[in-house]
Length: 236
Image 1 (cartoon, rainbow, N blue to C red):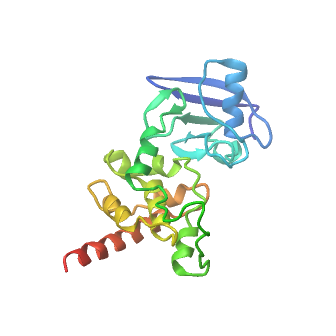
Image 2: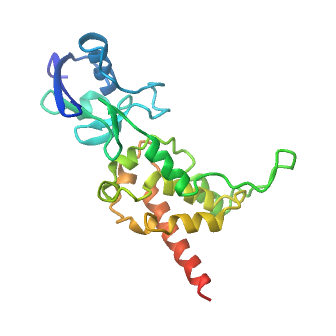
Image 3: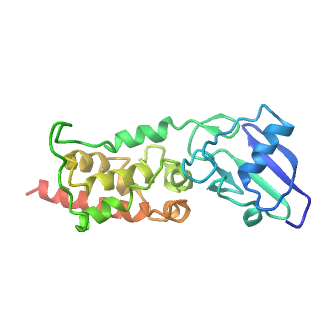
């Protein structure tokens, strides 16, 4: 770091606050926010848990970009000794840097992002061919941890609150390709509606900003293909 302090500006609803935070080597944005809460303003509300890039709960807007703050080193994002953080966009703000995740998870349900099982715990486990193309597609999205960074990055969500969004649609694609899931028709019906996959403009922000390097845009493209096939079959 070239300066001894970092000028941190925090969006807090209708106002912003600025703090001078000591700069250290290997400092993360979460470290900076935590310093403010521990040393300058104990009323500051924010979320974090694991601090090692596994839970995603510390996601915030950092200089206008959604990021996991525990994985984001200050040295890589600081601009002229300054940082600007705010709550994730596209979600209601509860307080300070804390957003209400309910709308995000409600859309998982709306996209039929729940397992539709055909067996009970008393049945044998269904065999799965790990080499099949469908299984490869299913596996490509299972590392999503629901951090909603992609949701915050999505301009389509910003312009259309009814749009299901990248993460719910990625989950739908995962289940659509899961041989153990029996909800194919329900999923296709759910993601082909007014807020479904065909609202996606393929701008790619979801894929560009996913901290786990997943590819929701390709999953949504797959859903577009499958819903069209489903619709054409229904007209025969």
